[in-house]
Image 1 (tube, rainbow, N blue to C red):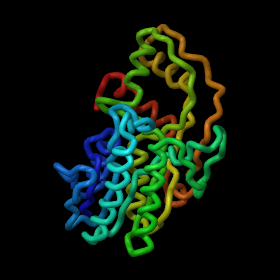
Image 2: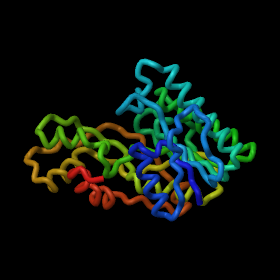
Image 3: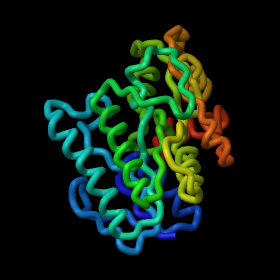
Amino acid sequence: MRIAVTGASGLVGRFLTRGLTVAGHEVHTLPGWRLGRPAPLTGCAALVHAAFAHVPGKYRGGEGDDPAGFLALNGDGARRLFDDAQRAGVGRVVFLSSRAVYDALPAGTPLPDGTEAAPESLYGRVKAEAEAELTARIATGLSGASIRATGIYGPGPDHKWQSLFTDYLSGRPVAPRRSTELHGDDLTAAVLLLLASRETGSFNASDLLLDRHDLLAEVARLTGCPYAPPPRSDAKVSVMTCERLTALGWRPGGWDALSASLPQMLSGGA
């Protein structure tokens, strides 16, 4: 199947393009395309929309000093892309949304599939609005689904924990923190399942509730770092459950996937 992927050069996009190719699909990365421009989708059976314009290194707060431009580029860009997909006869669209659509809910709130979006940041708002745009087009014949993904980790030249590992290995103070995490390969597995499905709506995608203490204790074991990891965090975390993906056969890799990836992440391997 020929699949168009936006944002293919980003951290998440690299996981997607590699995984889709390994699965036997022809990946069209839309060279030269930018959000807001007409998308060359003729001949594509499916579209995975992972592109997002933001200040480097930030998603929440990614608007920088131009919130209007941020909303226009990402919001109008998604709307135009979905219109282009419908005109081109694309059979299936998967949109990469975010757990940020839940950020206005109190910390510690359980987040099962079907929880109503409650964004707080502009990032969460633009993701929720793009989900709604895709849903509106489903009513007019476009088949699609949104993945509300948590933070993505995994090997790569600019992986998400690069500065954290550098600080810890250098003996700099590291603040306690707990967060939900998902390996990029497991996100790709979820995308593949949704491309093959006709299910619509939003799907949570999350795996580990990870404490920095445990993560950096494993880093210390692998590297021989003499510094103690930070204490465990007692912060409340809203955890997504993923019943809809699980029902499709999705099984993320858990701690085993994390352990297998850490040596590459520490060595800087792709």
